[in-house]
Image 1 (spheres, one colour):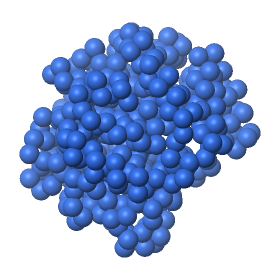
Image 2 (tube, rainbow, N blue to C red):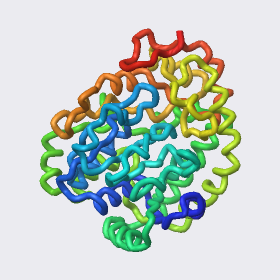
Image 3 (cartoon, rainbow, N blue to C red):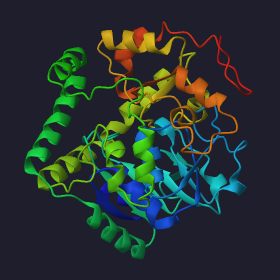
Length: 380
């Protein structure tokens, strides 16, 4: 947390998850019934956090250059607040949202700057994740400008936390350490096989989080309240509201201490991957961004992902098709949905830290044959 406080110059609140931080920020700065502009491409649980806060999700058009909100096509006059995603570390056009309540999801963008200023300092709140860049398994930080807001958010956090458990903390730290060891020792394939054998991965059919519309309607009757939405929000992270003990806080501090040392290696990977003809154009806008993942836009993405796994390269953070298609009726649909659908079909996010391991496969990949909606075209 000290690293984020120093980087942003803001007051910081420690959290068991980024998810809880997003909910707290939305409840604190937005009133139930307000309209929130958000990207259709993000983790499924984000949509349910918005609904839990009693807000009306307004799905934004996105740019096929970066998968973020396309400000030129968005109706900013028709919304009260904006939730940015900063997908894979590529920044949203934060300066375009002046005058709106702005909540920045900085989970992917811990090291990203805009005009020399760190993301997480443009809006009322910046919500960071300790499971992404630091690889700490879980944890979040909510960064705010005013101490009065910090005090109110601390009370709201404490009211939502559930009782801690040493056993859960030990499992969380051990799982995170094992995952990091598998990546560093090139043991991804056997690790995935073992995880499946031990049923450590949640089973899924179709979407990552089943919508269950009838049950969701019942939960909406209790909004704004978070616990009724636990069945959706806790996917893959059942302890997202659980109080964490000293072991987890020690581990998070150890992992955060490695983020600055990881910077140069991450940048080198970004620059290496940027030479590929499949790289998303926005990556080339600034090669000094230590991206969480480098998005490539490839033909037959799912086959490419399977090939990477066969070569011991893990590919995560592939999101389900956009919210427009996932939860019709629970959000106002985008007026221009095709760029988001195109992006979701073709994006292949690659960890720049392990770029050298992935490049033998990535160099063989081709750009999509289907042209993206919009004004640019990928390299031939």
